[in-house]
Image (cartoon, rainbow, N blue to C red):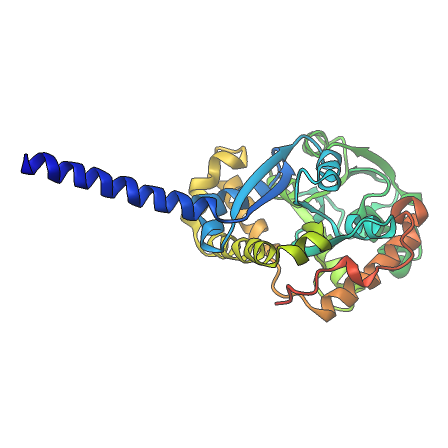
Length: 329
């Protein structure tokens, strides 16, 4: 009888502890973050979930996967997602159209102009008359920046001097490796894979953007969310930002963490894993404040000059509300 009573008390104690833990978890505010289904943001959200960094920072993370960027934009505007990962231009465009959206930096990784390892092409000047792939379309931000760079420093518009081939990054990677392109402007994670295949980084778009922005490092992507939602849920947005930084710290310092993440990298070989890891680490923002915001504003005006209204929409200059001001570091 005594043993039976003891067992019952143990079970009751376990149930009480479990119920308390469950109650504490369910009491946390839910933050719904929309991401591309197979995007690199999933690496970080996995780290947050694995290490329970959301709970440690006072919220519960729900990841909503979407098939396209446009789908995530619609989800944000509809309130299905409270936060998405996008660029600051989206926040500015939404501000200009009356939507109350703002931006906090997530990554400074942009992309690179890649060339074969044995090519004679050494600089943008050498691209004249060459066949150049561009991931995205004619209004790709990196393409606009490199066009502005050649205009300012070399006296010609790159778009007038090369045979531009626009397309999807995976296809263009294969075209470059097969020798059907002389150079390729692509996103950072595709550039990392090309390095493993023997290609060479000729120009870093992040370096070009930094020079154009007066020395400040420009964020490429960030958390985009409603100002009104953030003001109504200050602990939730502060918790998300803190959890993101904590996850990045783990990813910056732990190679073992990248071993665990390897299934998400869509690569089985260590060289590609290491290249993606190193490129991700390079893109971790080091600071964010007035200098960086001024730099983004300068780069925006250059992009607007190159892309016109088709690129920037109604945005003539970046509204102050484009950036969430409670997240400087």
